[in-house]
Length: 512
Figure 1 (cartoon, rainbow, N blue to C red):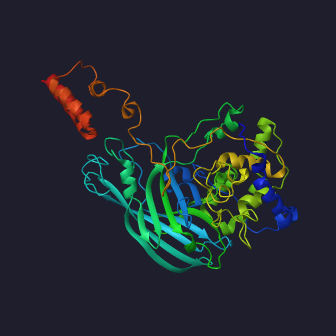
Figure 2 (tube, one colour):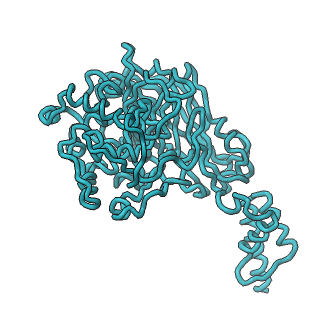
Figure 3 (cartoon, rainbow, N blue to C red):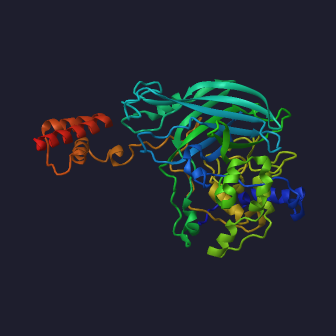
């Protein structure tokens, strides 16, 4: 855990707000015991036992922010399928067809969603007689060579006290951006991404497809808090991995309360169809990191299957968190006194005067004050460094939530000043300036061949050596031409078929 410098004035931003809220809001110990629901947050890179075995349904992160280039809109980004290895073909990473991917919006602070945007997906295969994801270079989303494609529908559900008021389909058969197979298969992936940005009417814009995982942190915290001696910090564990991303940009007036109250609570869920044909919630995510490092094992699956209005059952996990005790045991940094009323205010209610809605019912949501304009120069520690447009007022892609959350958990708001962090301060890829803002995914052809570290002739020679059957030396000019031509064209299928033919021909010669 490493020091991070920030101005003294900036450090007081969130602390001042929260201390005032603690005094004015009556969150003394007696007040906390009288709270209704209050719970945990969740960033879910394999955070719970059941969902870790079904990554297609696993939420990884939720982001919500006032759009920097369109400040009259709000952008929500939700990601699924953690640790997508870019070269993980031939099936790569589709969205699940038996799932409902939902974005929930609570616009009055009652811990119940008044709006729900639901994404459902269908898969289409042009040629089932090949194993290939694509049969040639792909230049557009409707390219005949893109063998496996997906489309999605969006429904808007309006609810009151969890009863359905109306259901409207706002998008139908929208194309999904494919997994980034590699340079040969998708020579201009940015163009494919652009084609997957879809305007669905009424000022709403949507995107679904693969993206670079925008969460940056060193996940080796689970090795006894960075190795027990801080030797394991500074490595962005998620560097080079992708996720499946859903992004929605909506005119802000469409998601805020009609009375003009600007604060919204946002979370995402995944519902999976069970054997009886009914949909059951299997994943849930709002704020980052809490279902990983706040909820104990006995509560993790329960939290994923439950809803914010039932969060009272998890309150003790927040008021008496385990993480500060572990840090004290390993690094001798004294844990703040309990109960942790400061954490209740920041993460379960929103900070009074910043992003706490009136008459709030404490619950786990990512709360965003949509009336706060985007920062011209965002600070990675957000509100903790005086930047009220950042975390925990919503969450921008560039917010360093690991460092911010760690400092708050260790008592920053209670006067225990600290600069704890994991030495990973920014994402490995630069975020985009326009919707959907997430960075392009790492391509499957990454590595020395993709980076062009060898000349073309050397590449062909290396491929020929790699593909030549064991125990053979050299080959006919016809064999080499086949391999070289295949390498030059990037046709993986031809390479494999050509290699198989060479092996078969030589075996026949030996047999006769």
